[in-house]
Length: 347
Image (cartoon, rainbow, N blue to C red):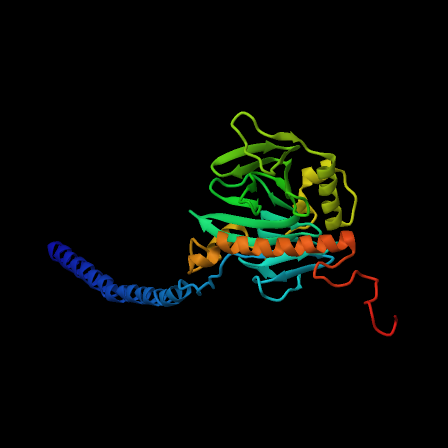
């Protein structure tokens, strides 16, 4: 009887384990269901890929040739886009391209920027042509032809190797910045014309043909007819006249009197900072149509032949005006100012 009870208990125990085993395995399929649900969102997360593709397509940037940007105008300043065109008053924010002619009156002064680091200031009673605005190997090339008067070019910091920021005279001599301020004066009222290049601060170069004369702060060079021989540079200390000319130029810009040491330390850019629309050097390159600054490389520079014609015409105008001022007699055969014409009822 005991053996039967033990056997019965054993059979009952086996049945209980079997039922337990069956009961535990039944929910297993239900546990797999959430895995499918969790996979569903993965498809949804891939949907934004389409919006990323749309955002990755940038809007085209308008490509334009390099320009000069006017940031300061005081007194009489006039500009015409090309020789033969009409002069019009200069405006702050105006853009000036290759071939433009800029002239200032007896009280005029204008400051222009190529980019946020490079600026030129044209002084009173001066005439300048924008000869070249381009790029070479990614570096900006800016050449301004000074026909008469005075101008200063300034670069904030060391000029990158390969770039050019310079003033050219009619005899194809260059005065350029390496890292600060150069002032150039060209007087066509004398015979022969006299040009003086002054290194106000930093490092400056004077180039004639394949020869380069390096100037340091406080030095100037009389460029008229000069052939700088190796080891015999025609360099002198800055003259009182040149220093006063620079001080006058700075005074016109700010309407204040500053010692030359302060102006040299702060730079002309501190007296006429760039406006908001002036591009950085990187933006200037990025916005240009190509390495030449335009799809047509011939648009980047005025030819020497064209400049020679302009120089002859402008120089004659300047000399005629100078003769009128000194003699009071017009050069076209007319009557001097203040005198009535002969004949008529007054006789």
